[in-house]
Amino acid sequence: MPESFDKHLFDELHSLLDDRARAEDFELGLYSKDGSGMEGRPSIVCLPVSTEEVQQIVNICRRYGRPFIARGSGTGLAGGAVPVGDPVVIATAKMNRIIEVDVENRIAWVEPGVLNLDLTTQLKPLGLHFAPDPSSQQVCSIGGNVANNSGGPHCLAYGVTSAHVAAIEVVLPNGTITLLGDLSAEPVGYDLRGLFIGSEGTMGVATKIAVRLTQNPPEVRTLLLDFSDVRDGAAAVSAIIAEGLIPAALEMMDHRAIEMVEAFVNAGYPTEADAVLLVELDGLPGGVESGVEIVRRVAEAHHVGKVRVAADEAERALLWKGRKNAFGAVARIKPDYYLHDTVVPRGKLVEVLEKVYRIADAHDLIAINVFHAGDGNLHPILAYDSREPGVQERVHAAGRAIVTASIEAGGVLSGEHGIGLEKRDYMGLLFTEHDMRTQDLVREAFDPDGLANPLKVLPSGSRCSDSFGQHVPEGAWV
Image 1: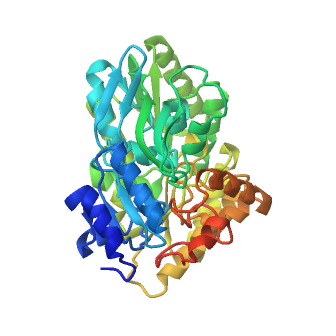
Image 2 (image 1 turned 135 degrees about the vertical axis):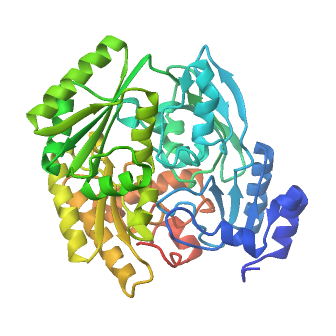
Image 3 (image 1 turned 120 degrees about the horizontal axis):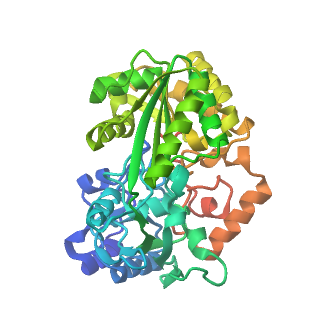
């Protein structure tokens, strides 16, 4: 049991949930971290199965003045689900029902624990899908997608999670159940739904989500373009969009990523290339074929090596398998990796990529670049071995230098991973003190007692950070 263990608190939660309230070392260890590599320590883990149970957990926490944190699958990469302040973890994995699918209005009501890919798989016979598709699509939850306003390769054309959520049932930090947004085309009043999406659990717990469904396109073509110079590949990205063509996806991988992915999936990626672009076009057949010709013409003007068009669905799936498994393939080079997800203007891609390579070299690290090139969302991977003495300090320093270079190029801190703990103390690079205080006032309107996921998003010194006086957990990148 942790030092902060409160038997009376646990007894109340156990009375409510029976064996779904847990405080054994195994469960506390399991829920002590997320995909970021940072680590904290919860006091109790709760596994509710209904909105009413979430409400009662929140009310019990309020009575004891105990912070709480909502957690989905724990795949987040910014430390948003890392427990801080000895919180009660409200894990929503058992709330995994697809409640209703309204085909006519293209709306599905789901619980937050539904996995992203599971939803799309169940919708496939209906000719529909959920458009946001993070690389962790097989395991990330819809609730987590809402918390971080997640993106994915196909969000270039379709938009990130906020564009695909109509309404959210929420248990607010004061224990009230409310509905943010509605199913009408033009909801009245302030967009509190949009405010909640991306709030990373600091404004309450989502318990039901109305997601907008997208019709499966009648035609899809996937192309792989290879370049002998990464600069030509980056220039081709801007040129494709300058032609007025917005592909469904426009992904880029550098030479190290190509070698790593090909060894992992054997998809036929050209390992001699300096960079590849994975381009996907969808829509009506005539428009798609026209788009393929535009991509060919632009690529040839930028010294493309070969333009490969996937011949069938199997080849298309193999090409995407390489892209979506790129992070896991890093293990072929080094056992550990760290990445940011800053966004820079497309015209600055080459400039920032070159800086990333120089930063990695200066800190004796390996840089691998796999990213959403169409919207400038970088994912520079720093591969390393945590067993090497002093390597963590080098990784920290390189990470901050990459963030700084991105901001100086006119970029922003995050495209889809969120702020969490990882980028919390970088917020001052992008926002003024007045900006952050204003954000904190908005947060306070939802959570005046500062109990919902404290010490996340906003830097120390804010009202929420001061509430618990906790330090960032060991292993944090800030």
